[in-house]
Image (cartoon, rainbow over all chains, first blue to last red; front, side, top):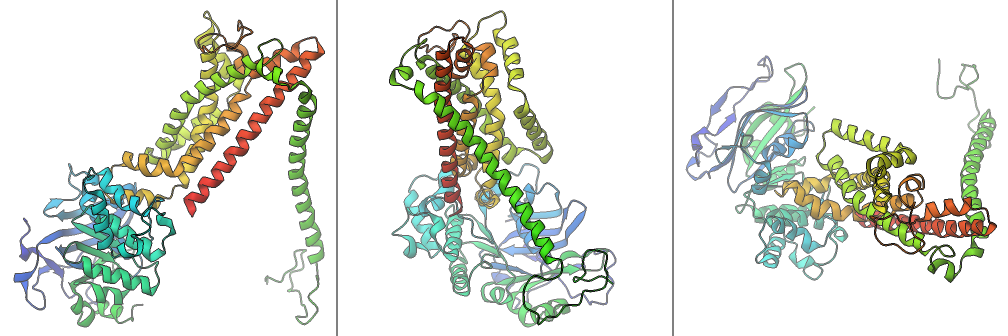
Length: 298
Length: 302
């Protein structure tokens, strides 16, 4: 671990009246968390330093600096188009397939630049798994869905134990143990999403990125996914993008609020505030955060 | 002022109507409906005409060729039987498929999985132009390349047929590969598995039915291709069954051609009989391919 704890930066208060000339990020400050318990803060997994993302000429994200810590659940919230999914997908280079994608700044993963010259994107994703908004199981059996990645990564020994462990980890085992050979496409949406989580954790990644994992699900299935996140917490570092603020409040240790910065010519997504979840929802520093979490966002 | 209630014939005042009147056609609705019905009839008639043409072709071939079909006709050597032509066609088309299918599938994989938009467009254009190449020109090309100053051979025919089949297999396969949802590639990418393993274990299995369909359809097309085979395959072929593709080899299209050129009327009947065999094969292959595609599409979406 080569990122000192004191390097963790969060955005400070920024009075809305203050002119932000060219959409540049506000001054970052080293700030202690509200409860002042730096001593127990786990190590930093991701450190994002002044990250900006462009799609061709269009800037999607500007000046994001934040630190994501091991074993915690970090939620990214904010209105549509604020760049939170873009940021999430930048963490495991899923944006690389977009030909016009360009990133500035640095994202350090355990101190290594994710976009460094000799970094292999396949290796990045091997350690940083992702679950998508829409469940996307392979048109294979339930067992083969979970066993697919271990098989292709050479983790063949004890495969069925690994599959069982992953399915138990995703709280799906009891529902599917008698029909492992059935097609995964016959499962309900919520079961499919838990299968996708099982598929992701079967290769024991370090980090799980969840892109609105419950937005296509009904409230009961959503509840199951949230329970699952609580049970996975600690074993994995989890970053979740969600539109659902109650969900962020229920599951996340830390919450980052993204919004559109309208100071420049065109609105650009940026990080407004990043803090403990209770603080974001209870006593946000930034009036824009307060307006959003209290539903007064215009 | 123009509004949604305007009539189209230059009257730009909103047409007044009584909302409580019975709901029968009013205004120019009757005229519009006649026009609408007329276009429906014309479209239907064109579609029926296509079916009728195919029906007439099949009827003619069956009625004239059925008399020639007998066990002896199918299983004996020339001049009375067609066995050498059947076997020869199977060999020529089979070898052609062995050449064209792997190449075509690889081209399709390049198009959908690896190519940039620009190079994909170039390759697609190449495939479409290749598909439009007259068969006789492909025949001449292979003739100049492999046969001129040497001898005719089945393998030369296979190569010519492979050139004809390649764009069909590549484009057909590419279309089914496009049907494999991008979310599956994304899921595989996010698991840290290299793309070629994803291609082998997720994408190709999902598209297998469609790839087989494209291949069968191209086989059906190639089986009846005559022009290149006339030039390069069979002059000097024996009357007996020949299994060596490096020798001149008899085949169905050329046999139909030479039988129908003969002066005696029996040759004509035999040509029809052989045509019947060919058309039956093409129909069965096409229908089978369609059924296979429908089944694999169901499997992909359910």
